[in-house]
Image (cartoon, rainbow, N blue to C red; front, side, top):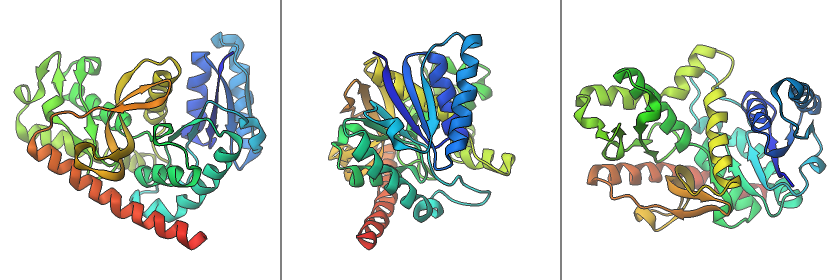
Amino acid sequence: MKTKITVVGAGMVGGTLAQRLAEKNFAEIALIDIIGDLARGKALDIAQSAPIMGYDINIQGGDSWELAQNSDIVIVTAGVPRKPGMSREELLEINFKIVKDTSEKIKKFCPNSIVIVVSNPLDAMTYTAYKITGFPKNRIMGMAGVLDTARFRAFLGMELGVSPKDINAFVLGSHGDTMVPVLSYTQVGGVPVEKLLPKEKLEKIIERTRNAGAEIVSLLKTGSAYYAPSAAVLEMVEAIVFDRKRILPCCVLCEGEYGINGIFVGVPVILGKNGVEKIVEFELKEEELKALKRSAEVVKSLQEEVDKLIARKE
């Protein structure tokens, strides 16, 4: 029996992710959107690609949560995308209601699922899903670090003229302006990146990584990134479905790790069939650890806003 995966939100990220999942041919897919015909149309289009692309999965779309019944993994992409000039934080109150409603549906229809949150502001929305579903911490995570790390690796590859596949890196912390590219764990073909690029060049690449999402928003004018975000989710899904025990940076609940407690923030984790199987504690440089803790404090303030919104609704 194939894995069942539900993608919530049939926009550009959700629709592209559904296509990527279909082409991998390992899961039954449900695509759900408040605009039912949008989800039905994209699901039908993907299904009609099957004879050409060679997959034979079952994909259905619509606005009914019955489609998601007993899914193994639920990916939440629903929400309002950022507009030019809009910060992720400004999205909080707008997307809180969407993620709250979605989380209530997940709790009802997919009580044993692993949940991956993509909606922004990522860290706060992952916390929202955790609070509303009441799921154990290993089954709630946010996609951020995999995407941010991919962007960092891509920019380094462009600068050095090498394949990003040969660049190992980790970007930790919040999915926002305080993210922390960890230079002490960044290597190019095994060579520390700090030996290959001067400090000022690295700082420019780090700054571009932090602004990578906004850069795409400003170019697209009417939307935000979706190719790289959907690819990042796929990497996480495959690690879970195939129990690959991948070490990937994900937004998860820290309970003392890195000196951070009670906060959802990006840290390295082992991803396998049980979801977040372990947080891996790297030996960071003092300034890197301080930066990670500062990033966690920013997330803490957003979580406190979420708590206020939850209390207001109750």
